[in-house]
Length: 75
Image (cartoon, rainbow, N blue to C red; front, side):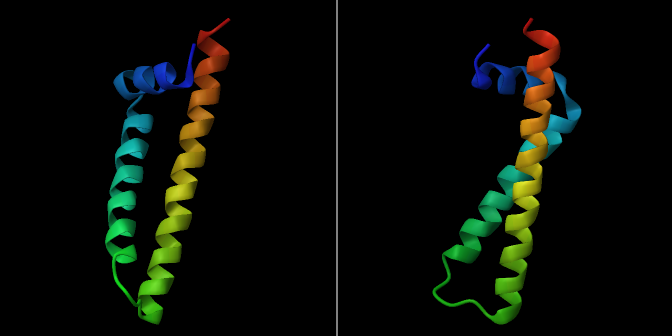
């Protein structure tokens, strides 16, 4: 099973994956808004770094869920 197929299945079946995916997408939008500014204040820089770490943590958890799905459903 290809990874994209697993992602689609998880988006239909797994509430945690759905929530993580939505939050990841929202953080992407917020980061794009921050990155569109020419200069960032020190507070904005800190907030940007926090968002990046949070986004990465969500992506890591989504990858774990994909790996778990692959183990249990593709034998």
